[in-house]
Length: 235
Image (cartoon, rainbow, N blue to C red; front, side):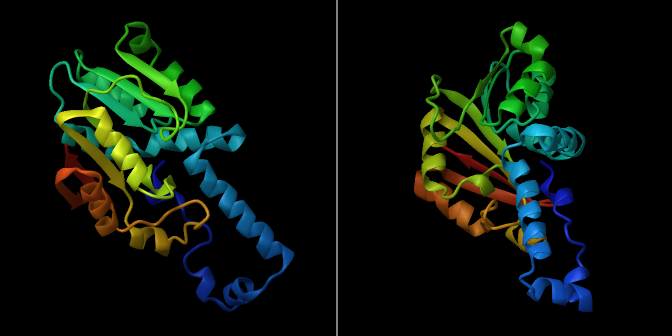
């Protein structure tokens, strides 16, 4: 999901207005309903489902392409690369790689059944050709049969992990020696400014992510900022 464009409820000036301050400080049912609705919408970023999930998937397809363009460029695709995407959403990144690298094999894992179905439909030709394999399940729970990936990547996923140690260690175990893990994430300051609900979003700083990658055993961790952070860590 394009987090940068999708967390704009309420409008930034509302909380500073007289009406906004009264609303923020009250405990009325209307405010409670608003908070619950906001948390529900935010949860769709984590695990799209139902009618709102379809809307979320359409936004992903429209808004995530630029982030995928840059992230896939950073992957530095090579012939016969074995690649895994964690949280593939509607399958945009999977398809972009399949169209770019005809000899690459791409696997994906997502725990939204709606996204699993949509991504399979979107990548049907590559699945039928044996170049793409999409799995349904939670990355932290589902066993991954392949243990020799050249590259693993995720886009707008790490906020939804309640801690980073276990997922980063699992990623490390799935990479071949010299393989790389690539991440895109919105910055902590952005998420705080947008008041992304704590119950859904873990607002990690770039320093926390880099420290967790090194603690998990990654080496040569590097990153740059471009409307969010692009991170590369090598095994």
